[in-house]
Amino acid sequence: MQYLILSDMHGNSEALSAVLRRVRRKHFDATIVLGDLVGYGAAPNQVVDAIREIAGPLWKIRGNHDKVASGIEDGANFNHAALAAARWTTEHLTAANLRYVRELEPGPIVLPEGFTICHGSPLDEDRYVLSIFDAWEIFSRFAGDLVFFGHTHVPSLFVSRGGETRVALLKGTSGSIKLEPGFRYLINPGSIGQPRDRDPRAAYMTFDSERRVVRWHRVSYPVEKAQQRILKAELPRVLAERLALGV
Ligand SMILES: [Fe+2]
Image 1 (cartoon, rainbow, N blue to C red):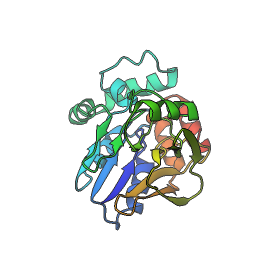
Image 2 (image 1 turned 90 degrees about the vertical axis):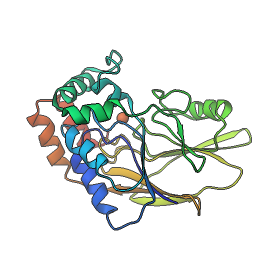
Image 3 (image 1 turned 45 degrees about the vertical axis):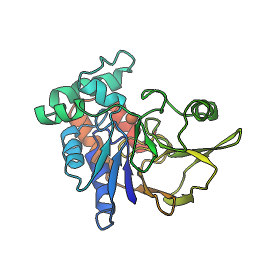
C-alpha cells in the first residue's frame, strides 16, 4: 500500500495546500494524519476543511494543540503564544470543524498492516521523542517494529537493533530509506505548518509498505502569506517570525 503521511499542519493552509498540490497526481491507498491540525496558524478552518476533503481512507489522531483548541484540555502547560493561538482557534473554528477536531481519536493506533501511528510517543500521546534516550525507552517498553509519530516538528528517524539505538535527521529536499527486517523504527515526517529544523519548507512523507520504503519531502510555500494571516488575526508576532526561520 502507498501511504501519504501528514503531520502538524498547525492551521497553516498555505503550507498544506502546497503539499497537497505536490501530491495531487500521485496515487495513495490511504492518508495518515499524525495530529495538530490546528494551533499557531491563522487558517484553522481551511486546514480542517482540506483534511476532511482528502479522498480515500484517512487514518487520523489528535495532537496536543487539537485537544486545547477543542476544549478537551485547558492548555495549562502551553506557553503564552501557543495558548493565545489555541484560544483564538477555539473562537474561530466553525461548529462542525470544532466538533471534528474534538472527536479526533487519541493515539497510538495500530493500522491494519501492523504499524503504529501516534502524535507524541506510543507510550504517551503528549511526550516528545527528541533524544536517543527517549527512543530507547520506547523500544524497551513498546513492542511495535514501526511507529510513525509527530509532535517534535523535526523530520527524524530512530532505529534500533539488538541493544543499539541510532538517530538520523532527515535533511534536504527529499530522500528515502528502505526499512530492513530485524530493525525497529520510530519515524517522524516533520511538520507541514510549523517546521522546527531550521528549514522553513513544509515537510511530509510517503510510505510504500510493500517495498518497505519511506521517502521524505520538503516543499516551498508562500511563507509571507501565512505570516500576514497571523499578523492580521493579531496573533503573537513570534508565531509569524518562527515560520520564516523554521524554528
Ligand atoms: Fe505540533
